[in-house]
Length: 227
Image 1 (cartoon, one colour):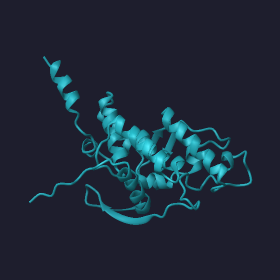
Image 2 (cartoon, rainbow, N blue to C red; image 1 turned 180 degrees about the vertical axis):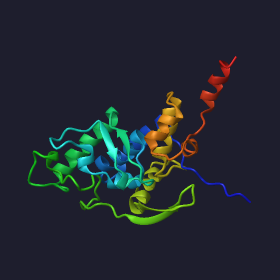
Image 3 (cartoon, one colour; image 1 turned 180 degrees about the horizontal axis):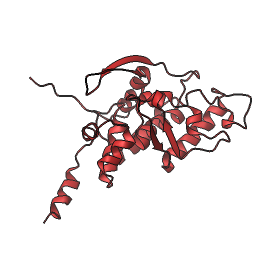
Image 4 (cartoon, rainbow, N blue to C red; image 1 turned 45 degrees about the vertical axis):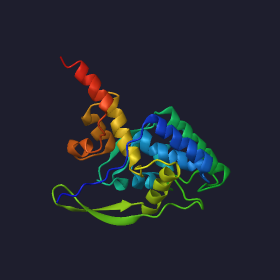
């Protein structure tokens, strides 16, 4: 008997807004947690990538935010570099808020405030409440070609993010909902599958198609104009 793989729920815009409001109201660290959420919904970062992306990845030495951010080969699950785009005003606002929080609370800072806003450039952007990087676990997956590939997983951060969804009362949502929602929303807004695949860092379009949640409303509109 075939096994059905349970996929993380794709959230509607209203549900994403609710998640952010609930996080702001209930989290002990809303500045950090809102940014973690938006790195999934806004640019499609995996949780393991969110745990490893550094201050130098998102900022120039003079402290300006990069519009084009490299998800380096070393931090991606498929060991394939890709570019993510920090152009969403909501994401930029959340990043600025969190950077100010880190400086205020002296989390991973240096004595050189003129460089990287005083951040240690090679330290992860997202830090634990005590100012440490989230732990990573080495895992192995099998590629489509049958090859064994090592990769890093941030299990503790993944469990924490899933709890944020649960605390907000969003059933079926998990730490992977951000990437799935990011992919589906791009398709709904007219992006082609090839573009979405590049933004997600997938090896094949088939991988991307499994991420996309069909929209009944869009399918209805498409059928209205088919003839």
